[in-house]
Image (cartoon, rainbow, N blue to C red):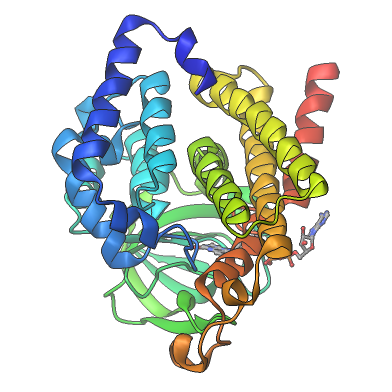
Length: 390
Ligand SMILES: Cc1cc2nc3c(=O)[nH]c(=O)nc-3n(C[C@H](O)[C@H](O)[C@H](O)COP(=O)(O)OP(=O)(O)OC[C@H]3O[C@@H](n4cnc5c(N)ncnc54)[C@H](O)[C@@H]3O)c2cc1C
């Protein structure tokens, strides 16, 4: 890691502590199982098994303040932790709870909401999913139509959310919806809903590979207390933007990408496919990844200010997703048939019989779509630059 030289003694000692922990606690078989991950998040059981190992040190919530039950790591230490986990191939548990909504509740929640939602999230009792996208509202999120009608101290919710990752595992969902009929962002609110409330139902959406990762969630006259609203009525858009900034920019992908590139180089060498053209493509990828790591460290760990703060999240999202797909393109170009096709019975629930490596590459095609497509990210970067340039 090129940036280790820039660390002070305390951060270097912390890094050593993380490496020693990984050496001791991360079973290489657990890591290898996720190298060809077929879905956006790690396999549910492997992810939860790994969370149990992180919990005693609070490293599953490294970026949360200590007062809220997290590890209270500095941004640099949190970066070192996440880079090392990714490089070692530790399973990436679902981010919707611990990474997205947890810090959002810390920021916008009341003391009573902190008490209700944070402890069960930290100890693994609660699993969350994200209810933003709708059949008619993806990139144009402000066009969503799920509606919560106020009746005294209750809301009655009707509508549906789509592409809801892991809704079939979750017992809670955070929902961006309308609480007023006007077609403005000020009509939106942010609710924290128990999935077991009568009227909530989950319909699976199967992927081409046969895997079940996302769902459509329906709200049919779902009655909840106004106490489950995060922030004020009409503050939903601001809260969603805060959460999306975390979603797009607070991951550290450098370590995972570096591991994927090194695994690819190993595969190419073992298959004796290192032609001059492939070597040049690998060298270019290596340089571009180094540039990405440098950007990720500067923006993610050291922090960008002003108008570029949000745009840095957009830039990070564009860069890691496109690098991932370039690594995969080269993997497919240099792979043999065994990397592509699995035995006929290898796909769950009648999906296409793909080998794990191909299913993983297909899955990574979604990376430039989820969290807001890269076209939308580019548009947001352009808007931020306009502010900076005037
Ligand atoms: C694997 C995966 C998991 C997901 N998980 C969740 C989840 O858990 N919860 C959740 O709420 N959502 C989730 N999503 C949904 C995701 O946020 C949306 O797919 C994404 O925001 C794009 O919206 P859309 O699919 O409606 O595409 P559309 O908005 O219909 O876009 C289609 C295409 O048009 C382009 N486009 C649209 N508008 C513009 C524009 N103004 N300028 C230029 N190009 C434009 C887009 O870039 C895209 O290429 C997930 C998606 C995927 C793929």
